[in-house]
Amino acid sequence: MNTREWLVLVTLCGATFMTGLDYSIITVALPEIGRDLGFATRGDLQWVVTACLLPTAALMPLFGRASDVVGRRRLFATGVTAFTAFSLLAALAPVPGVLVGARAGQGVAAAMVGPTALALMTTAFAEGPKRTRAMGVNGALLSLGFVAGTIGGGLVTSGLSWRWTMLILAGIGVVVLVGAFGVLPGGADHGAVRLDVPGAVLASAGLFALVYGISTLMWAGVAAAVLLLGAFLAVEARHAAPLVPPRLLRRPTVKWGMAVALVTFGMCGGATLLLSVYMQDVLGWSALRTGLGFLGEGVAALVAGGLAARLIGAYGAPATVAAGLTAQALGTAAMAFLPASGGLGVLLATSAAMGFGHVLTVVAAITTITSGLDPADQGVAGSLAQMPTFVGAIGVAGLTAIASADAELLTGLHTAFVVAGAVALLGAAGGALLLRRASSAAATV
Picture (cartoon, rainbow, N blue to C red):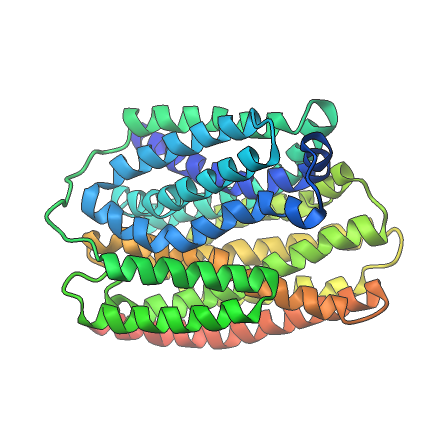
């Protein structure tokens, strides 16, 4: 890569890192936020996280297609600007309502940033080794954002104030915005294309209901999501300019790539949450020490991001998925050996194996989803590639329910880790086979 390409990559990956950091840096600070702003209950406090998650998941398809209509750099810059402004508002929030509203604004902005950043990356780097290398860096930084958030959130909250977590996000946003106007290509706008309003309403409502229902274990919400998303698919089949073209959803590389991504995000996300429970509720660690306990996962994610392009180039995406999900499966299942005290080596080794395999799988899956597409479809493809990140909440809810079913917390956690490993192992076998067939079919088209 030349200097300009590196600057483009740093700008886009900076946005990815910023949004990944957002979801974890606030989690460690929740207890102090509750005390400082006077949240009535812990259930009310959870809206500090949920208010950001819901609009991101619900609006991502809309903004993915909108980026193809109004211009990707324009929407990316708008999203980064809004994210920065809402982060500043969150830092200054005097009461719970203002903070929750600001977090919802961050979620809307993140829905603009995520798919446009991925679409800009796929158009800035030609399909092949350069794009795969860029995807590897992007995937590593997404995971690093989570780990840095848990560590940084503990350090900042302990040494300064929870408000600095939001100020840090605003500072990163300013840096990314400078890069957006300084190095990102403008590209042509496509304003002549009509936006599918009925599809946007149904998709947004359906995804909102799905993530809300899964997050709160409210099955009426899941049922509503099934009806709304079914109606969305029916509308898309008839619309002249659909929000998500049915031909994309029928494309084997897209649908099986999304399935693989759903497995890896669901099982890794759920296991990571349970590791936090293990460190704090079983080992009795502080929030700061818990954040440091994820260091092995973060370092392994960076290593995997650096290796992913080489592995995909040498062996192909299906083989990389098989290797990645197998490593994730073995690392997660081995967490069943985590003891009631001590065991730092086991914790670091197992979480590192899980993180390493997860990033390999994510890069291979996203590369598969976004490959071989018309440039005009890269915006919506970017939203589809990132959708499993949020729909993966179903894995978090499922593994949490398994862990909670046993009266003995450690036993329940061990059971959940074994289940997560088994699901990932099944994904390794089935996903690799299906992606190999999908890639072969796409190559003959």
